[in-house]
Amino acid sequence: MLDLAILGLLEENDLHGYELRKRLGDLLGLRAISFGSLYPALGRLEKAGLVKAVTNRPTPAAPRTPMSGSLAGELAAFRAQRRAAGGGRGSRGKKVYGITDAGRTRLVELLADPDVSDDRAFPVRVAFCRILPGPRRLALFERRRAELAERAAQRRAPAGGDGRVNTYLRSLLERDSDALAADLAWLDRLIAAERDGLAAAPTTDSQEDRPS
Amino acid sequence: MLDLAILGLLEENDLHGYELRKRLGDLLGLRAISFGSLYPALGRLEKAGLVKAVTNRPTPAAPRTPMSGSLAGELAAFRAQRRAAGGGRGSRGKKVYGITDAGRTRLVELLADPDVSDDRAFPVRVAFCRILPGPRRLALFERRRAELAERAAQRRAPAGGDGRVNTYLRSLLERDSDALAADLAWLDRLIAAERDGLAAAPTTDSQEDRPS
DNA sequence: GGTTACATGTAACTAGTTACATGATTAG
DNA sequence: CTAATCATGTAACTAGTTACATGTAACC
Image (cartoon, rainbow over all chains, first blue to last red; front, side):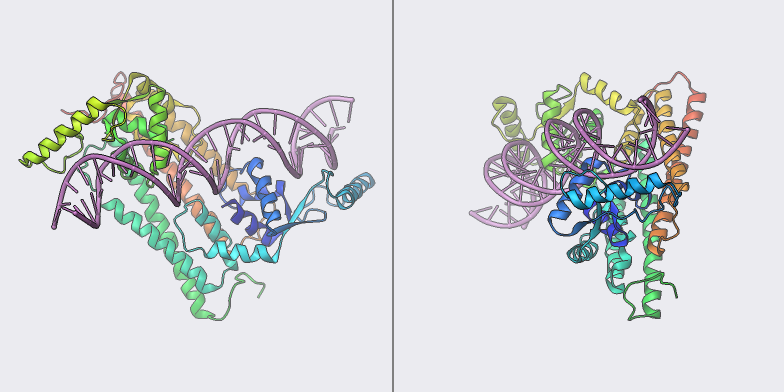
């Protein structure tokens, strides 16, 4: 799931680990992924050729000093650049990663994976599903819908003679099925919107939200 | 979290692993915990003295043969009992576990733990919170409410200049905050009910849902 | 010049998974 | 007697965590 999230974010922007973590938290619901898993994951992805370290540019995210005129600041930035570009190994500057072609391929693979049972991964897949071609995206939503519908069905058949559920357990069970219903409704909205979009422009692949 | 769920279920009923797993799925939302984690967990808990294997009785859960009059069945049950009771180690019959006093203490400890940030564990704690004394239960709900309220607040302050969120990401973010709102409302209902209960009978500790 | 926030990394651990191996009980 | 289901367990692996170690840049 981390791999998916990292590749998805890097597909939009070159980023370094620290910034990546912030976005993981802000954009996706991923409650503060720890550096202890993030950096090793980046290393793994780099070794696999799915991402690669690009030499330092000023972070694309809003710089804290908006060209503050400070000469010292500019100088420091220059030194940092030298260190990172020249030394290669050993230097401890920011390491900005970008996605590779192989990474993009892998990302599509992860997004289109038929297994939609992972509750943590699914929202992340939705977050980046814009890069999937329309029909694949629709299929993803529909598979997930089927999965949730099955869960709801199994829940309605509680099997073993129940009745000995206390107030709290009952409340919990109700909350669960409410949440499930809300999720199904959400998916239905996504699916309906997708069908509309597909009917309107059946050849258009990705790139919703383009400038007009 | 598994420990909590196991202790909670055993506090209600003596059970063997296989049956335990079923209930984990049916009662709590835990999607089919694997045996590969369940059995080691039971072993760990037994070694720690929190549960202990009780010699076999016919499972308390509805027996498949409701006193079917079958002599063969009775005989088989008898043989199973002999095997389990006599052989001890080495025999491969059902192993029915019960909770110990230490286990009950540990269960209360886990339920009252001040850390309510674990999203998987919290529902399980609610499922068994009836064994907590009223005020502790209320405190549990209130801490959780505060935790979720804080998450909602952080979400409303999206920090970095956004705006470049596409349709899917926006839909996802909205779903998240809807789910959060629903959960807060659920907690508010639990808290209100708890306050009522506490006001009505401030001395009564646990045991909601008792007869009469 | 010292504190705070930014930034990267490693090591040991935790909590689960899948795949495998085995045996007992029940139903047709 | 044989297949399905019940039942227990182990080993290797996965995906994350916390705690630690270190260094850089910015702020006042």
